[in-house]
Amino acid sequence: MRIYFERDWMKELLFEGWVYEKPLLVSGPGGSGKPLIGNFFADEWLKKGGNVIFMTASTSIETHKRMMKHLGCELEKYEEEERVFYIELAPQIEDIEEVSENSIRANYVKPEVWDKALDFAGDKVKKGSDLGTLVTSASLNLLFFSKTYGEKMYEKLKFLVKGEDKNYFYVLTLNSDAYKDWAKALEDSSYNLMVSGMSENMKLTLKVIKMHEVKYKDEEIILPLTPDIIMEIKKEAEGGRTNLIPAIRKL
View 1 (tube, one colour):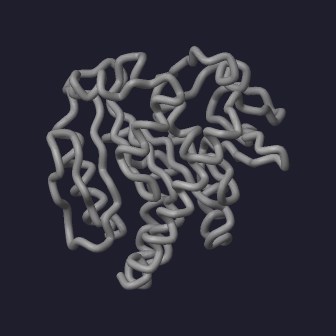
View 2: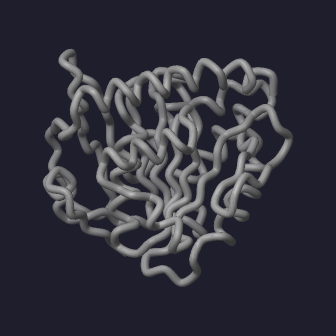
View 3: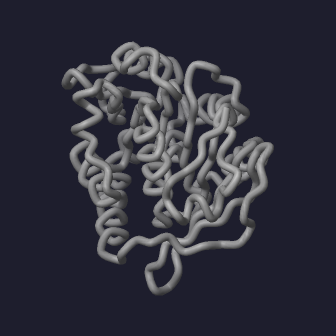
C-alpha cells in the first residue's frame, strides 16, 4: 500500500513514495504552513482516485477551498463526484450539525464526537474508491486546551499516529509550540514524521524526519509557494485560533 507523487518537490523528498497505512504527522512551530502540506497530500490523493475528509479548525471551509485552489486543486469537481467531505470544528455546539450535503459542523474536541463525525462523513463519500479515504486535519494542538477532553484527545491521537485506526488513512498536523511534551510524545510515536518551518524571508521549509519502510531525502527543502499565499494563510489561521481557543478552554 504505497502512493507515489506527481509534484516535483514531493517526488524529490519521497522518491520511494509513502506507505500510507501508517499515518503521516506534520509537526512544526506556529505559522509554519503545516495545513498547506496536508493539503498537498490531499490533492495528490484525490487525483489518484481516493476520497478526502477535511477536518478544518482555524480556517473556514470557504477559505479552505480558496487555499486549495491556490494549489491548483478545484474541490468543486470532487464534491460533484462525492469524494470530498468537510468537518468544521465547532466547540460551541454539543454534537454535530449537518450544514450541507458534503459538510457538517462538529464539536470534535470530544473524542466520541470525533468518531461520530468521521463515521458520518465516511458514509457520505463514494464507496469503493481506489485508495480509500484520507483524513486530513489541522491545528490538532487546539484540542489540548480543553480542561475536560484535552488529555483524552492526546491519548486518542497517540492511538491514531501509530496507525491503529484501520478505517481511514491520515495526514495529521500539529503545532509543536503548544503542549510541547505531548507534541514530542506524538512525534516519537509516529511512524512517519515531517517537520515544517518558516525562514526569515517567508519561505516555507520541510524536512522528512522518518518514513516507514521507504528511503527518502533527508535534507530540508523549500516549497514553491509565494509569500502572498503564505501570509494569507497565516492571517486566516491566527484569526481562527483567537476565536476558537476561548471556547475550547470552557469544555
